[in-house]
Image (tube, rainbow, N blue to C red; front, top):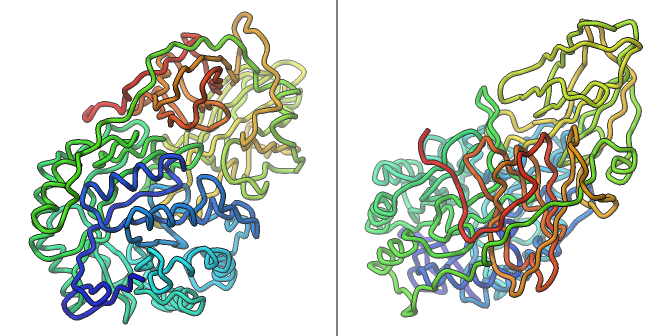
Amino acid sequence: MAVLDITDDGFVLDGRPFRIVSGGLHYFRVHPAQWSDRLRKARLMGLNTIDTYVPWNLHERRPGEFDFDGILDLAAFLDLAAAEGLHVLLRPGPYICGEWEGGGLPSWLLADPDLVLRSTDPAFLGAVEGYLDALMPIVLPRLGTAGGPVIAVQVENEYGAYGSDTAYMERLYEALTSRGIDVPLFTSDQPGDLAAGALPGVLATANFGGKVTASLAALRAQQPTGPLMCAEFWNGWFDHWGGVHAQRSADDAGAALDEMLQAGASVNFYMFHGGTNFGFLNGANDKGTYRATVTSYDYDSPLNEAGDPTEKFRRFRSIIGKYEAVPDEEIPAPGEKLPPVSVELTRRAPLFTDAALSALGTAQASDAPLTMEQLGQDFGFVLYEARLPASAAGPATLAFDQIGDRAQVFVDGQPVGVLERERHEHVVSFTVPQGGARLRVLVENQGRVNYGAKLADRKGLIGGVYLNDAPLTAWTSRPLTLDDLSGLHFAEAEGAVVGPCFHRGEFHVVQPADTYLHLNGWTKGVAWVNGFNLGRYWSRGPQGSLYVPGPVLRAGANEVVVLELHGARVTEVELRSVPVLGPTEL
């Protein structure tokens, strides 16, 4: 049993003074076969605790349908942490931010136009309570008070940056405690948001990357007694498509860490190991301009995306060793990497064929386009189709009320434009052929906003579509989640293809190991290896490669599938031992 108590002077664990030295490691961003390796390295850096969010939107992708298997096996992850001798800070949300799709809030909440997120709205709280009911059988036996590793649980996440409704926070507190959570609860907010996000009687912690003395002073002003803790020490940062790769030097971050530990504070590194936004699970920001987060969540962390120790790992370990005991073991060497290989993608399956579309999704007819949420869809694409009438033949303008987030427009199969939410684009012009034409609009959900006031971020075509200022009606909306590509029929590539297309190739592996998929010469799309969705690529950068976890590979034949949305100058992709995360300045 490991029971954490809070005193006027700090933390006490099993009756002894205790400093939490923790690191963020999100199980859902790391292949399950690699959890043990990452947890061991956390202990070797000197951490005594691991911090993880719990992504509600993955555990309950459909209302009432819960998944705790595979990469979502929270119980197995917590048990592995305990086996490594690590405690756990559990952050179940319901909102988690984390540069994660929708901040972890399920998209199906947005199907109700009247539901108010992160509030005392009964519809929202009812959904939260259903989620917690499903979570508790996993968590309660693993609380420190029951002999497990979980020594503290967070209430919500950075709520002070969003609102100041204490009644809402109190309802969440009651939802947790009434279900048996009897370890200390805590809140976390940035220094300027502490007052709005605090909950009377609950430990407040602060999130910051620098200005350590001032930030701890702000926490002490809010909370005159009790432990000082930085619940998110931002030792790195995340990247957006079209931006640069964020980096923070080991010396700069190390100096802030030293200052924090010298002040007697507890710390949680955000992140110790970032991992990857596999599939379609990156979030986005929108403070007037929408910007999607990239696939990599390397975060310039002590462990890089492949789990290899970096200079920060060594620097932080040395600093922690000045204040706490650090294991007397060698720092692990970088893991094995796959030898370089070029893979020819010799077979393909165009998206705009009846066979491919039928295998990937079922169209629904309606007067106006349906949003993803109305379709019961969370991630991926929606293909919208309508008929342009013969009466519109000639120059035409097509306008959209709102696009979430990126629309490719085709007339009789020919691309006529791309409209991006990021660029505030809404209108495309083209010529309608004599006799009318088939209109197709392929819309990509590039990631729901995960922070700030715009969390109610619906996807697809939202509102009306207008042809020459007249409403265009009689649509079909086809959800393309791309969860399963097994129904696609690939044929040998011959000639050029117009429009989105799946490309497939095979390669041979002697001994599986980590690698990076490089897509030089490709434009934008999604890549899979052996059916595992690696995530999005985009020539816009900064990211130029996709991490391939070794456990995804197998000895012998392996498959790569690439959905290219536009076109490529090449027919091959490459597997290399090093990533391209992009330039650090433009």
